[in-house]
Image (tube, rainbow, N blue to C red; front, side, top):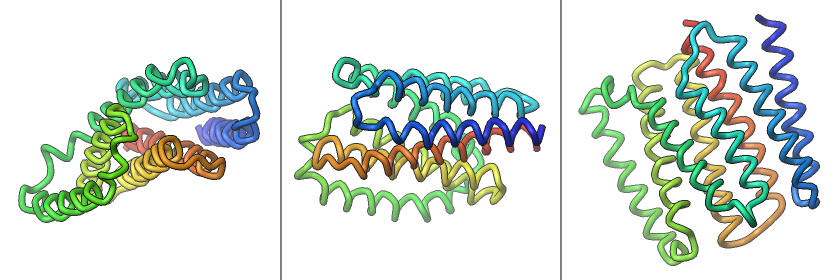
Length: 217
């Protein structure tokens, strides 16, 4: 199993790094193929390393392949790609839902109330810019916040590798979501594209490792 993990992990990161050279150079087909290859490596890493398959996570992987493909051709498929991104955020919430049943109410309120206050402050600060952001991206942001909250409570309940990997993976996805919204609706910079793309790649790998830890405990 170790050889498979090393091979598929190496293949995944090599494909991820290679895809960075094709961002914004008008070779969308090549970029799409390399991103699909990266996700195929990640899928085989999961399938070859897990004793029991989590079909919700498998759906996340397949959905990621589709959303990445459509978003590369965003001029024609932006809406469909965005909807698939939203579906993935909902699936992450489902994967982290265990926190709803295992978290002590007192602990939940201790962290939830300050979190809601912080969210309110951020919302007020960003309100002048929100009219430029589509409702689908706002929904992605809301479900991302829910996913990271549940992931945080899961980690508080059990501070193991599985929950740590998942928490950091979701955290990277949330930060990347903020960057992609800022880059798309407020100020486009190539460095932002490279940064959030790298964040997504690392996040996907961490979440994959979390799912492997879950089935192999």
